[in-house]
Amino acid sequence: LACQWLRAIGAEVIGTVGSEAKVEVARAAGCNHVIVYTKEDFAARTRELTGGLGVHVAYDSVGKDTFDGSLACLAPRGTLVGFGNASGKPPMFDPMRLAAGSFFLTRAVLGHYTATREDLLASAGAFLERVVDGSIGVRPPARFPLSEAAAAHTSLASRATIGSTILV
Image (cartoon, rainbow, N blue to C red; front, side, top):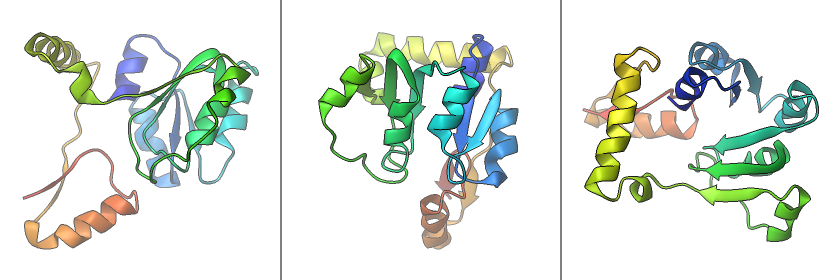
């Protein structure tokens, strides 16, 4: 969803994925460039794609395995937005590392952005406008019967899933 939204507002989107199987999914979601971070140094490739500058914002949903690389992708005064921990919590780090480029670091939590009814309605309205205008398409969730909850967790843990996963 984020890649689609970013592309819709005119951003050049460099996406990272954990496997070759997800490359075309990322391209279809609007990524201009896709890097398989488990096979390639995504920070070095990002620097190459940006002519050495780096990116203004890096959104990191993976956590432990990608935090250092995401930080290394930033342009001066860039922002790293952590919002997930698919591989575990990022390691503790020395905040002085942010001085390398006057970087900003934030850990976004949806509830802080939708804490009031007004914020929730504004956020939902902005999202639904993008769905209605076609700039964001919503992928149907992967469905697992409740009796296969263990398989669903295995699929999530191995990062084989794409999008939401629900138990029915």
